[in-house]
Length: 555
Image (cartoon, rainbow, N blue to C red):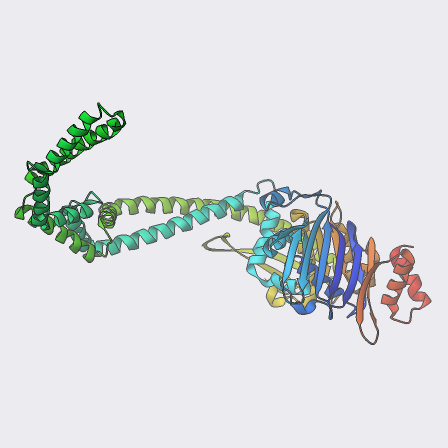
């Protein structure tokens, strides 16, 4: 429920700070006083797009803030899901719009996005303006009305279950089509795919490091003479009688003997002996490797042939290395397996699609039955209320036609309407006048409000085109909607509606040579008498108008 509204520097509003209450409230004021501007500010707060020009001239930003009581509504999960602090007694929505076009949104002082504040706003306030009457001419709105009433009954999971099953059905159909197309394409390419797989399979690629190893081995084989020459020279340097080993051995033995006399040479002697042993091992390794290194033209040819195969495959399949060739081969294998098993897979998926389609049909039939039951309630309620709203001969019927399975079922719904005896029932969009559509929408809103239980409903001049007793009945319907802790606010030009309100607000405009300012105030009883009297007689308020106003107010 809307508790408080604060607007600063929005269009011609300098500073508006007003409290609201549960029950039925009315807002009155002359045309052009700024009622639509206040509604525009509420719409901006709830996430509607606005032009930066709405910031009052000469100011840098405007602020709209509203306080809500959420204690009667189960909205905590929304706050938890969006990581926002929850205060059910005082939920604060705020939007700041800068003159440079930038804006910020907050919920309980937590910065948020317009989408999130809009999602929350849709659960807090329903603003019904005259353009919303056009919704009545749309099939999806008519179907939605019936569904809202239908879901107000005990089993409210049916539509949800149908929508999920239909989504699964469409997804399975999409998968089936994609698989069939892929299978057909693969079959068209099967010979090429099988040739490519066999070519890669025959190559027997398994080690992603094979290419590097072969390239290194080939490099060695290509420089055999150079390697043997270096090894032979080293071997000779070690093996000669006066070679490195002989000389080092003599020096090591001499220092070893001397260390017995001079203990300081003990460490040097040990190091020389260790180096001699290391060099002797190196000498053996060089000699052994020298015997192993030999030119092998057959091995060289084999390696070159293997590398040519690998290089050719990499170029042919645009792969960088053996690992990518292995992945290419494995992918081809999967595709060939799909081809080999495609008929079986397609048959299984076709069975799944058929099963889901049957489930959709069964659920849609139950949905139709549930909707038809709800439609009877809509027909009776709307006809009853419309008769009180000045259309005594009204007939209102919800017609059902079948349509192909869709996301909302298999029902094509139309609201049929006749305002006069003897006139045929026709789609409401074809025969109802603007005033009649407004009254039908009020009846539907009354029905919907009981099912959806929105905290706040605002009617913007829904009384256009009516007067007298009809206006009074409209007021009584809105008053009835406001029962059970709900809040209904009606912007009206009619004294009959204004008089039924439990709380009365007036919007007025003041002008001077430099600025125009809109203000809003809650009226006292005496102020209400004056306001309603003025609505009855115009600016020249008569005693009769005052008495009439008192009568309307029951005073």
